[in-house]
Length: 307
Image (tube, rainbow, N blue to C red; front, side):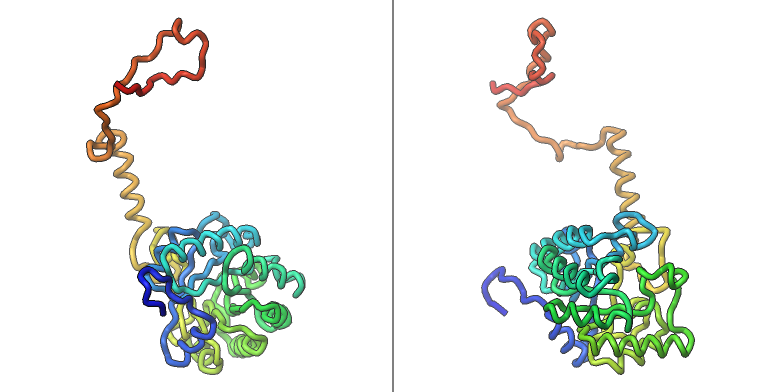
């Protein structure tokens, strides 16, 4: 690491993340969708920032991630990259491959992944699916783009799965997920997200893979954990999934803060003297008479004139 003042920290790489697993150091992952959020989570010291297609729900207001496009992902990834840079953060940046960007063919997947890296500034991409996407993963990795896998509850397959429900609860499906995890590792994934699966299954998968497992609703045996920033901050008082811990009730606090602002505006308590500017060299000139204006539309109603 450079000893020069203000020198940016070296970013975490896929190899360092694997070494973290080897030495038993948990990996902290959180989502971010804009520069401000990225700066904050970067300063907080997270290891990995995920620009998730969950932005379709928590930013765009959809009821699923399916409407998110590749252009949306690139747009938000660029903002997050800027925020991390401003924070001097060393976090590894991953971008989700949205629905429709990789399912059609490996060729389309490679093109989409390369755009996310080249235009969005991410260092790796994440895509959902198991053994069916082995060839896609191999092709993307061969093109030079690291891939994080994602199995279990895969939100882009919500209609196929019948809703947002825990996966792998029976022996047959648990064995299928274990096979999927092994297949993703063999295909070249450097990590894999395990979403909403029994903690016992997550323990088995994490123990059998050499690559890190990142859990969300998969228990404490995973090599790392990921949460949606909005859930972590409690931004939506009406939404509290079982797997998410709310570390602050920022939604309720924000409503209260904005309410106080509204009340102060209505009562003229804001802006107060501390929030205004003065100049002894400026006086206000009365509004010109209509006859003096003579049809001119470029004169303001009140103008500042030097004394």
